[in-house]
Image (cartoon, helix red, strand yellow):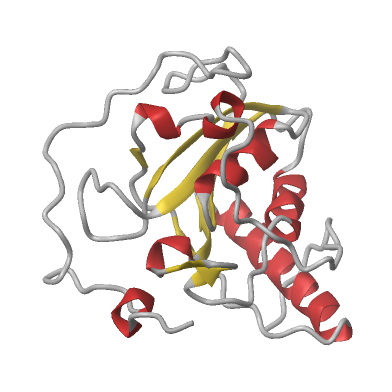
Length: 208
């Protein structure tokens, strides 16, 4: 199968589409959890932002995780305001019930982070693997988990991780029909596939 090489290259700010001035309207409540889809979120909760391929299946992985309060799908990591395609999942979680490190484990084990600008049959920059951290604590945890998972992948004979780890950019909600898509369409497409390699959690130091 041949792919357009431009689909695997991030556009520059000059090449990016202009986007939209208006924000995307979204439902007030999560279709599965019944919690708010937009801020303000319940007191004591924190947020995490992940990109791991097609966001329909990715969002379901997280809303099924105990301790997650709300999830929403959207776009981030590009140059376009209110864009319509660059797929991420925002996870709102209660740190008293689930650790950020546990969410990182869900992230790593739910997709193949060695594939660059693709996930399975889904090819393009919008499908790249990414962790967008909110603070230094999340950054350290993300980098430590990457290093631990890389060691596990090497031991299993797998390739190098290509996941981007960066400060969280602005999050833009996806269209309403994308939110909790696989709950509304149980037989819908999900292109996610993990490596089959378990991810160690609780690692506190990253490789230099």
